[in-house]
Image (cartoon, rainbow, N blue to C red):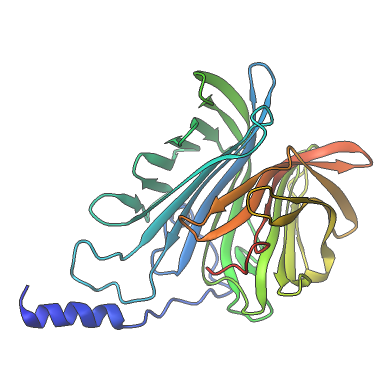
Length: 350
């Protein structure tokens, strides 16, 4: 490379990127918005669900692909320049095993190591895959001590969160994401827990979210839950916590069994810890049992098992709890879903 080109490449890496703002009234457009949005700072496809083996053993699973745009100018001419970074997490909650099995990967979007299509959901990192083909998602991965291959059928249109997909995460207008969910994906496939492949079936929830400024500077982390309700509805609720542990901002959406959609204001959502669990490995304490209130209804969340901590310091640089939970009302199971608890180790840095 000649000296002038070399200096131009170095200069390009020092220019600060201006990420596009997340604004209301944009609206979501499909199938385009199933795909990646590489101009934004961060993005993720987040797949969780409950599975059952042929022996009716319950399993929770999580597959997440993260895309990040680095803060320097991506005009660097080198083929190896990290214009985009992809990270992936996979986890299996198996009560027989007693604690979360999980794995993580990271790679730059260069030289075919990883990629994310802008046309539809098609994201990969090495041999880990998540793709939307027709009305079905497919995911396949081989982790350290388990493997998973699933087909997930989407029978309903995407559930747009917030105001037509514009989901506020803080008090300032820019503290927001574009966000939609796909609850009630009919899942079937196979899992290998180290003793051979076995068929599984169940239900899953997909979130797709992208943003440039997701968290307010006052926020330390968040609590999030997605519940498929027994009556055919679905609930998504979250709260952003400040550095003292109090609610900084909150929101949520309830999809009724007949398709009616209700969006909750911040004051209508509450998370109340009911029981805490301390990790024997990291010493971090999490409120693994919670009471979640949305409007006039409340649910008690009970974990499939307490030890669902994910140590992701090798990829996203954090430790968090993410696990399968049952939702109870008046002592009876009223739904199943996933609970995510971040910022209990250290404040989250996206």
